[in-house]
Length: 461
Image (spheres, rainbow, N blue to C red):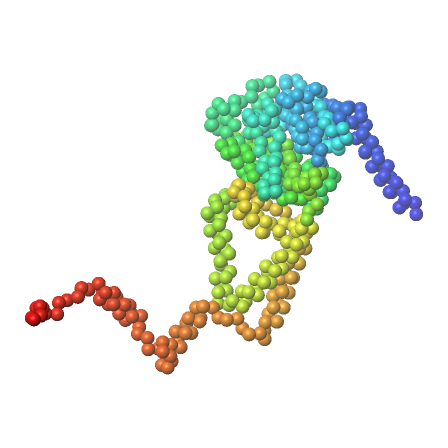
């Protein structure tokens, strides 16, 4: 009997010990890190935390340090007194440290700009001289080397943008020029792969986010767990649009690849729910892509052809077409009603179409939605409602008056009746060719001048 009581107590003690360890690390102001190891830390506004990594190997030339939080901002900096050119503030931020010769220790500083405590997770990754440097050719943002992905969203689409990468180089050497040329010996040979990872449906918790971020932080994990949506070359713009999925957690990351050395490096992953977890407006309580279809003409012509295909196939069976339409479309309205209260990607069958109609820029967005447990259940409900509705209508309409035939059959039937029924006045109507000839003759007579009847003399009185 003591075992069931002992295990919960032990787990509680271990949980308190883990939380106390994080609190002590933040309170002491020192956080010891190891490469590729995630570590949780509580941050506050009053006491900055010094993150240190020691015993760095000599073959390491670059270290990317990153910090993630659920919804509250965290400030990371190279210096204890942060400045605009040496720090970043946000929920998913990172810094690149270019190591000097003989350097074996790196230091960064963490702090919460909010007065309240913020739970965050920190990690650092090392790269060698042949690995590309994410954000090494930054010309847009504040940091000299910026490995961060900047994300903006609205109800329609989500946009990510990032600074171009540069080629790797040895410790103490000068960095390769970003604009020296466009050949294979320059950064223009680099390629970028954008990956997407969906968090569990209906899970907006802090624990879920911090656990799943570990699957999208380094190159191997991103390729193993993420879905590659698009690949870019250096001559393309480093900003990409995606369809927004309000209430669904999504993590994005970018892998830069050097085809000459076959080496890669990962940017700092960024996450979004396409909604606010705290604001009253835009809150999260919820009431495959081909470039050719970005052209509106191609998209709408293709959509119209597919939409007209079904009625054309069933044009000879209007009764069956009506029953199928009522059963499938009517049951889909139940799916839309469920989507007001539970997340389901099936609702985007119509929502994405409306977004394409209402927003001109949505044609540039990459559309990809998760298909998870909720969707399987709702898809089964949709199928059962559709089949049930079709069967009920077929049974109810079995003894009813049949649908009127379509216009072509009516016209064909009337033509046959006129040919065989001599009592029908229309049976004696001349053929079409003769009627056209008579009409042309009447028009010709209208324009003909009157001819003289013979010699005319005045009357003699």
